[in-house]
Image 1 (cartoon, rainbow, N blue to C red):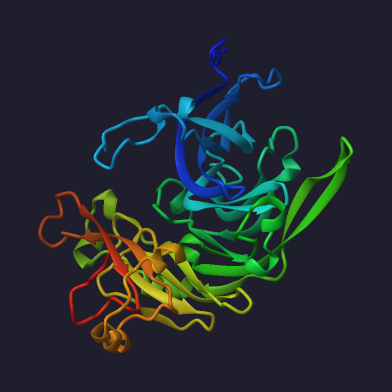
Image 2: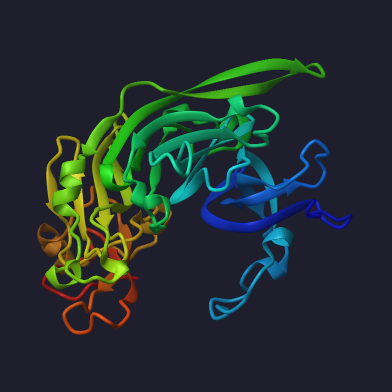
Length: 403
């Protein structure tokens, strides 16, 4: 009998948490920010829904309201009201049982298919809190969909059993996914979308590694008011997933804490599982297949991590010693074109630089300085660092230079 709604409210939330976000162009004109969230929720306009339910949803950020965005980069202490600053565009999943599914940090992407947007999400799904089984799943769901009206709109593209440890331990960027957009199927003439349709998807699977698979779309149309419009969109996995990074490689490459930490009785260092955190992909320019994947290992408390890359044949190398990334993000082409041209000296140094197939690479690295040996009782301190690499302006014998 909890009165969660009143005449001034359209939506009611409690224990809601934003988990991931994605930026999408609105017909080539405006950039919209979509946020994936989880929590107990009720649509106050839905008379059939009598109580709050555990919900995974996607909301659009109101960027036109000055109270909902930072006025400057120095305004870091500003706060905003989630209810007033967002509007749900999709209710992806609902269940009376709390936390039956949770959104993975970093696991949200979007594609424009004809007149509809499709959202892709990485989630952790459990049949029941007491069951013990936990799966990392990739979901697809249309904009405007409501799970309570039609649960079949929720499509599961992939699922993998993962360590139940991750159900209660939030891992930043633990469920990263990336889409490749096929520019030969550009819809620009129809709806202003300059990205094209996705044809490949790659995602991390916590302690189970990284896999990729090709995807496609089936579009159903119907006549509405004398016009033919898209009525439904289905996403299809066109082939079996290909493993780029195996669970055994994760176990050997992603490191746990040092010996002193592993013998500590403090619960912060008690876990025994490794995890991949963050990922980005170098795609094949010819067919859009994944060629090389860059990924991180961190796993927060009890993990020292690593930073590496792996190709489609499973060849695994350490990319940067001592780096434990949370997110890995490639520099967009638009920014790459703004970089100053290399000098002759820089061109000579290209042979010693990381060559990321012509792409500049921005890597957000959360460098974890584990002070285990010096002070086990003190808190682990984390220093956020932004590092930029590119084949024309990085020299491994010099300091890193970037614009």
